[in-house]
Length: 370
Ligand SMILES: NC(=O)c1ccc[n+]([C@@H]2O[C@H](COP(=O)([O-])OP(=O)(O)OC[C@H]3O[C@@H](n4cnc5c(N)ncnc54)[C@H](O)[C@@H]3O)[C@@H](O)[C@H]2O)c1
Ligand SMILES: [Zn+2]
Ligand SMILES: [Zn+2]
Image (cartoon, rainbow, N blue to C red; front, side, top):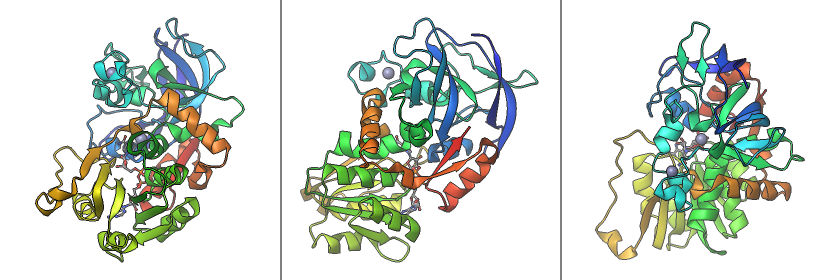
């Protein structure tokens, strides 16, 4: 398939706005498919790269929770055909030791695959009207665009009967929140969990904790509206960290024992250090929130030694997207993963508003519908 003109949201400067521009998309490579984007979620990680916390070469097209319809298929692609509906997730190299072991979320080549702004062969698929190179292949896709050349490892074929705009955004934040609970932490039925930060990722974790059978699910946030939503989705208790001390509240809720699992999406060192004090014996504190390189959390390691506690970081909910996303779709079909409650739709032209609404707390999960 030849080059084509597309419309995309381009970031040209660190902390800059998204500009809607016409770009040239080049021909697909043998390991890629051309996807006509139907919808894409907006994730906090898009804001982080826009702001230069992780260095993706600018100008760039971001977007990494796309979904669409396959229009053309590269000669080496085996897993999808033209016309298939696909949800897009993080790319992985498929050939490193972690990928070979089924731990694709921890691919040794993760940064090059997802944040490099280039294909493995060093090219980008996008150029602007003046002929300048624009970074592409963000998470293998760069989905803030009407069309994209997507690498095969990012593709998750899904049931055609499910409206794509309803499940478009399962590929990152939802997979991370739900997968962290269902794939990585695996809390036993009857156990307790606290979710620190009830944004898109945290609320996905709340829904998954209910699926897993946790009997105490404590949502923590700064916005009462998000805490109310958390209750609707399965939280048994809520804490507004603006007005109460979350660690003290967790100890009170658990009768002094502490919580078995704490899942943090805020990546704020003071929050992590304080919450660690509310862990139960043998408890686990898991971090998924992204902080700038060089951020440290100084945990208490004296008195807490006897607790035998664990701190771990989790990427993409330790999911294999092609296995886990179809499971999330089934849970959604059964009403057990009601992501619709988090979503507000925006046009591509309103993408800056979508980011502003996410940052202010007005919208949990902005979704761009093309
Ligand atoms: N590890 C991964 O694979 C992965 C994947 C996706 C997203 N992320 C990261 O996860 C984080 C969360 O993403 P999101 O899309 O849910 O973001 P979000 O902005 O929707 O949610 C963050 C929430 O934390 C709350 N919060 C802020 N400070 C707080 C505090 N002191 N105490 C309690 N709550 C507080 C905010 O009010 C907000 O509701 C981001 O850092 C994102 O980059 C990581
Ligand atoms: Zn790999
Ligand atoms: Zn993301």
